[in-house]
Length: 320
Ligand code: SF4
Image 1: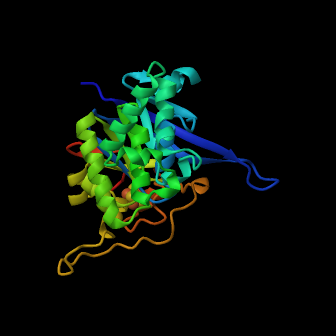
Image 2 (image 1 turned 90 degrees about the vertical axis):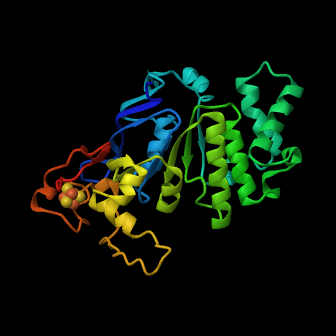
């Protein structure tokens, strides 16, 4: 069947002025991202902060407007839709943020927060039916109907994230962008929320785009993983394959930094020099050449394309 989401050469460039007498430059937050997501799968986007992964998630839902490229959702290029058409589509595409506290209205009860999307998108529902839907959703995320009468500050971090998930799912969307959904939670709570998200995915037939900097979480939750560096996808493949056989030197370094549970299992950690450069100052050629332990002369001038190296395993690097 056709993929649920097809992203083609997506760009988000912001103009900025350098000094008073200098020419304006371009910040390339997203620099030509192409990606396909099949129905029912979980694709993870990983990278350091500044890699563009959050910008990608928000641009896919047009919470940020792209400056180029296409986003086909169920076959339709949504970058061409009007605000009103986009509003209708909101029921099908939702986002869960890292910190639900910041996105929940502190003056609203949880019940009211969950009712709001239903009032907008399912205006035919009666008051009793609304309440029923809200209670059913609370139960689905492991909470009781009485939680609907509470305010956000009366809940724990884990409970608040359950509400963030409930709010995203109450309209029965098809695609959900999860932007670091467990990063703000204690490790003991993280696995509960990850398991909940997996159960809900199966029950409700959801497709996930899972944004994270945490590779252990990504390994657990995703079917495929895309690694981003300075606004570009540098490697993408099936999760198992990428973790067992990373191709791009950047991916290799990221994976080498994951703590190994067994201390006898010695693995060399690749430490990268310096921080990720500012997207305002994209290095020439391969943008990773300033930190790459395997950089060659051509890497400074020639930009590598994303090429299929193994089965469904792509990397953008001159080594291949
Ligand atoms: Fe390193 Fe060159 Fe490959 Fe870039 S293209 S990742 S600099 S080896």
